[in-house]
Length: 102
Image 1: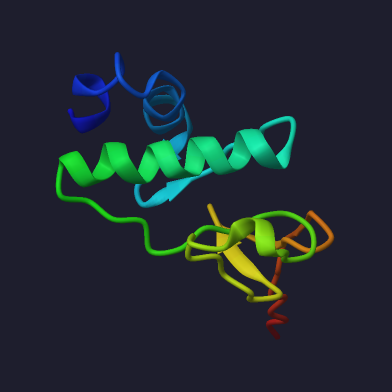
Image 2 (image 1 turned 45 degrees about the vertical axis):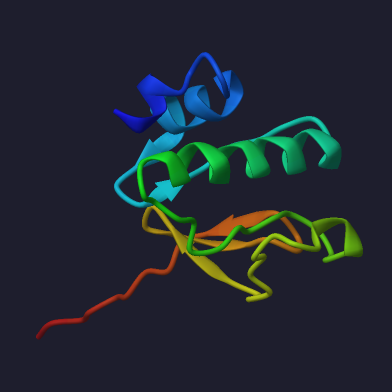
């Protein structure tokens, strides 16, 4: 509802929330870092209207000063939608357990 109510003010952020979110994950891709920062800032403003906050952001590649002011995760691996994502290399992997029975 928060995204629907704010789509006139923050159209790109609202669209991202409505189309690219599942439970508590939002996954999105944009063309460049400037566009990423804008959608991140707009998303935080939009969600604040409904009393929501972002736990942290995860961005592809090496961290830089460009992300100052945003809570960016520095973890080498993240679990997203049942997969493991290595953000620095922008690589997804699956982890499988094999059980052998007699």
